[in-house]
Image (cartoon, rainbow over the protein chains, first blue to last red):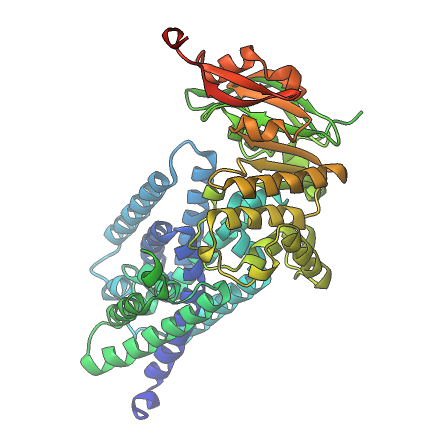
Length: 271
Length: 261
């Protein structure tokens, strides 16, 4: 194992995996408890348009992906707030429109871009020094904001109506949560891939949910499971020469089913 | 004088469905008001309109003299107990932490609850008799216990006005009496209380004002004035009647058919 880590790309990949495992799991707790999985998938697909635009313009695709994901998150929040259409309808529209934009951008590019498809499925080898710094910045930002607004995020997740009636800016905090999801997705797409990124947000938190009835403990367990999935998945993918994102997600899925079997909730009631 | 709640010609629609029509209602400080009406009569909608959680299609709502959207710092004067169905019982959270949320508005953005907030939470838990279960996850409570947790959460805000939406649904008779005894104490201490119920018999004995809602405001006044045949018929149909008991009517029953005499 140690000689694997003497490769620079592997060191970067490991750092990126720890970051992804941690940040995705923290955000995943809110996503699972508030039922935002579909929004997560929608925002993740929106990043495809952003990545394609980055390639088209010749700038770092993660930067354009940040813009696309944030705009999609805000678009979904705004549309559902207006209540003219249902939220899942709004997600469906943004989801498709941003993917379509991505395909359009690819069409405008000359030739076939292998790197672009690396973003769809994720690739450990592709993590550059700049990507890592960008991810660290995003990850630290997300964790800092979660730390600062910990009680507000808990409140709108548990009881959004009551949060409004308590005088807190519940609508703004909800938009903040969606924005944090968007940033988490962007920092994970390079390693995990656009298609699977929302799974790494949802599954560790869902596994942790099986194991505890305490909020803080659920978050802690989700982080442990997220890191375990990301790190074990990374080394397995290296050893077996499989796609890193898919291996991480399948590792997380395995942990989820084990957690469901061991769940104290399961003994009392259906989950 | 300043009214605690002031509704003028409020109409609320959900798409084509008219949930409330032209409701005007004033609640004075210190009032203990029951909002009664059959299921689907718009009682919950009325509470949500008062709190600004649903926007009226017409009319104005004022809470402590201001539209609910501009209440800002005055939200600390308002306590709200939603229906327990609004809470996910499988959410991983303990009783104490739920009640602590009642303090969040006063604690303010980003800042952490302090010693005084925790003291207030303990007092609220003791008032509803839930202090021993403070560390229990809400998933392991009965429906009645969960209801008391929500009451404690609203009390932790130390409000002047308390709004309760169907607090006795799924709660046994003893617990219902316990809750209304607590509400009477709070009322005597000067709190303004509005409680939504479809259970006329229980509320009539405790409150000093009754408002009957069935899409429109059917009547509003003291229980013995309001709970006559006309109101009952409007609310429950021509089969309903009160059985008199003491000074005020008590229980709703089915009227016997004429052939039974």
